[in-house]
Amino acid sequence: MNIEHKTERTGAFVSLVFGYSVVSLLYQNSASFGMNAFFGKAILSLIQAYCFNWIYFDVDGSFHHVHAIRRHAISASLWINAHLPFIMGFTISGAALSRLVVAHDSPNTDPHKLTEMYEERSEEELMYGWRWFYCGGLAVAFIFMALISATHIHTPLPTQRIEKRYRLAFRIAIAIAWLCLPIATELNSLELIGTTSSMTVLALAFDIYGMSCKEESFWGGEECKYECATLSRTSTMVGSEKGDEKQGDIINHLPKAQF
Image (cartoon, rainbow, N blue to C red):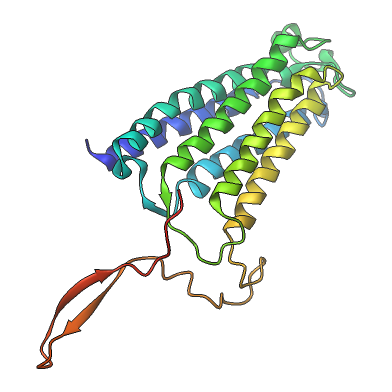
């Protein structure tokens, strides 16, 4: 198996799934001034999809010390198969999102300001099943995205603020909270999307903060006292007693890698 090809194709397919969620939140507004709750729900959903993309590709997809496929047969199998429920969950939530965006159960959502096709799809009271599809799908996607990240051995950053295991545990806690959201039937569609979007942004911010170097300012402006950039293996030249140089053994200066 060509590992680079496999990861590239999988990443391309995940990008298509993220793109589907963006397409699902599109709607047509017939109002002369379109700044209403429909627009707000669409913007929040777009932010949420962008955060998922950021976490998958830039947080979990970088600083690989050992990729899951190279690590072990079990980790490779988990990485490949975990993408199925991850993609299925996100697709289900995207399908439900298309109904949540055009629902008129919140203030400033006049269905007559939508075009005829979307007005027919607009619901005054959000069905219980849509809540479970949306929140449950996001929760499943977030849990399996954490599992995908756990299969890699990421390059350990010696001075990072929060270890990877705690950051993944925080994601799972958020996913559990999402599973409980459908029970809160008093939440309208705007409040529901706003809650999940804000928690997604919180998870991303927690990851970014946790991966930063604790020896430097979070906002930059000064160099880290510890050489965090020296994350690759270095080779040394071991000289003989006579002074003749020869290629020495590769020494790994990194601390114990994180799961």
